[in-house]
Length: 258
Image 1 (tube, one colour):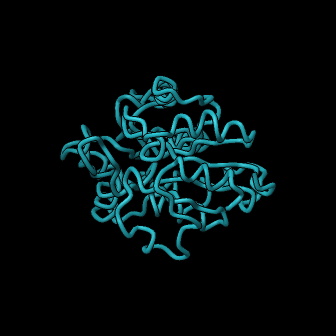
Image 2: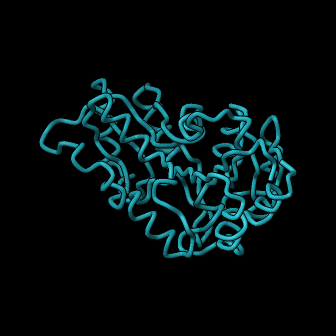
């Protein structure tokens, strides 16, 4: 293992699994190969479909040996932001993720912010219009992330980015993005380490790879999940390495080639 690598950042959905289907070879590559190198790992995710507890239980159920404290999510970052600013947001997030905002949102008081994640059941006119009116009244728009699309077992599916952009356009506001690919998210994930000491593995060329590389973290793009042919040619600089899957990315790291 290259001595300069002191942290491996790993995306989850599309990189290790797609819903409840494991990317072939990912369990062994993580549990046996990468863990044996004794390099600290952090699982950085923009998922807003489920709370941290539900996500951790699902990953363990899929066979991945992951500690809950190793998961660094945009949901957790959003909660910290809301708590710090003492906001009472309208939540446009999936019901399975609301657990992460318990004891924080006061439903009996008027909302003074709009928080948006991936919420297919809430992306309908009445809910979006309610959010629009709050924004017109001066409420800030907070995007847990602005993902364009994500991978489901039945194919690619629309992410929250389109709905956030629609609210931005109609209310003439700019969303504050909390998760990947913001520099603040990646810097928080690094802790006290320098970017040159870390490497990022992910399937999203913009949110995972370009976001990481923008602050100096090396980026390995995997051709699973939401990857589409030619993605590596859409960012500058290009990914440090394009890998067939997480398995090849791990092999690349362990062979001191990063």
